[in-house]
Image 1: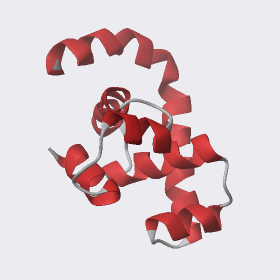
Image 2: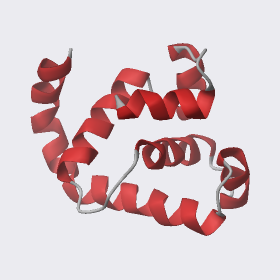
Image 3: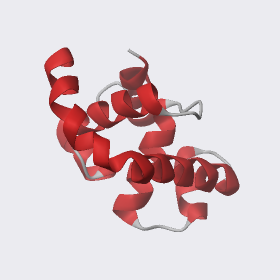
Image 4: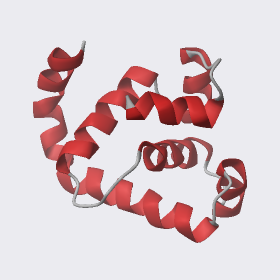
Amino acid sequence: MEFFAAVDATLDKRWTNRRFRALFGVSVTTAFVVWTYLSQISVYSFKPHHLLWTLYMLKTGNRAEVGAHTFNCDPHTLLTWMWRVIGTLYSTLHTVMFQFVKIINNFF
């Protein structure tokens, strides 16, 4: 799956749920559910690493330059995609709770 390939590329192939939670502030299951939701509703062409960037920045509160160095990207690119993810989730948040059970039942 695309999401888990992005996690492998970001953390290396030996990642664990504990390491994932330490870096991104949520479990891999939660991130996968949010990714599934984003990939179904977004007008943007989100990639899984955009969600990972967003989760990392929200957890750490670092400046964009630090996050960009961590993920080897441009700070402007990181901020652009981070705010798109946040904006998309914020504008559709009321539907997340209603569809959460449906998404969980389909994948787990």
